[in-house]
Image (cartoon, rainbow, N blue to C red; front, side):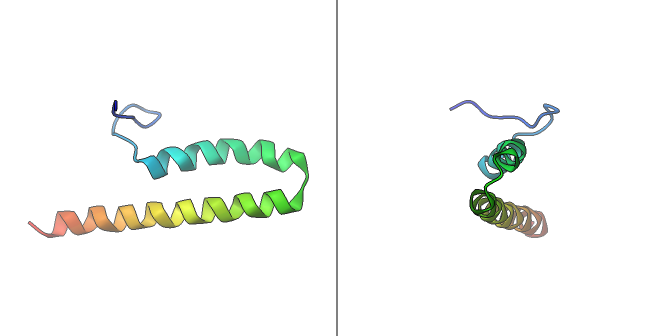
Length: 67
């Protein structure tokens, strides 16, 4: 599978980072639907993706400390 890159092309983006970027784009359209239940469910999805990103960041910082 080809490596994905961030929007600026500098570094590979993780699956969670790519999902977050696409969810943030979709969030605008979901807000226009006007259904508070859908909005809440979508916000929960974004919250969980954010948790995954935080775990990745913590894992990356630990890797740098274990040399």
